[in-house]
Structure formats: structure tokens, C-alpha cells
Length: 219
Image (cartoon, rainbow, N blue to C red):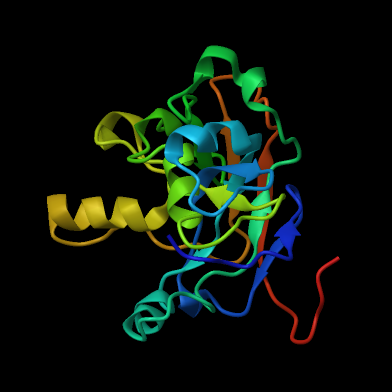
């Protein structure tokens, strides 16, 4: 678990600007939760009651920058720019039977330039959101509005369901073929995400990657 940017989320249909393609631009499809006030030392069992909203996130990542930052031992800063958030946040009860064991049990569909990239289910999370809350709250209180992401949605059955980030697919290609074949994103590429087989209860993320104008500010 790491602590990322917290003051700015990108709108679901806005262009997403980066300074250079050489940073290896990647997307990460994730689910996330929003808490109320969580007391320090909260147990995983008690944490379920503190989950107020569920969201869909694209956690943009810069893969060429990450290795150098990770070697410092202090976590990611430049490699983790602002995330994008889908337009609708829902309460857990709105998921019905698709909210189980602190997990969003829906496929997260990703397309790149109109082509299917993957649709693994959030049900495969290694730890449920209640367990992540308990981990984060072990030594601190979490204020109302705290957002916790699931990490990249993935599945061991990747040959059938694909991936929700380029880095995972490239790692699979290296293992299976000896080299990575899927390129990272280029300026002009479009990334689409939605949860569910048809219309997404969260709405959709549909964004284009563009070059950042030096000194520009977000809308």
C-alpha cells in the first residue's frame, strides 16, 4: 500500500496530459472505496461498516519512472500522477449480490483505441477493502472521505479475461514469449473503462492521452 495524490482527480472524459511518451504511460483499472471516519486500530470486521461509497478509478502510472523511485525506499511520487474517476459513486447496497467479502464482484472492461484489452473481475482481490482499511488504520485515524484503491484488477485466468494494465500484459508476454510485445501508450491513444457486462453502474471512463503544455494547469 502507498499513499498517492489526494487533492486532484481527473474528470472521466477529459484528455489526460503527460510530459513525454518516454515515461512509458500506462493505465490501471481499479475499484475504490470512500470511508467515513475510521478509528485507529479498527479491525477488518468493523471496517466493513465504514465503507460509504464505491468508485471506479483509472490509476495512471509512468513505468519508466517507477523503478528509480522505488529504489529510494520512500515510494512513488512522479510515477503516480493524478488518477481519473468515473462519474458515479455508489453505496455498497446498490451493488446487491455483486458486493461480497469486501469486494466488487463485477468485471472491469478495458479497451484501448476501441480494441478489447481485458475484463477481469474485482472478485479476485487478494485482500478485501475491509482488510485494506484495517491495514491503513493500524497506526492512524482515517478521516471521512479517505479513498482506498483496490490495486490493478487482475485474474490468474488472464488468457481468457485479459488485463487492466499494460505492464501486467507485458510481464505475461515476457514469461510466455521471452519479450514484451504490447507497447505503452502514445499521444492520441484512447482508453475506455466500465464495470459490468453492459451499462456500467459507475458510468464510464473514456479519455485520450495528450502531450502536456509546459506550465498548463488542469481545468
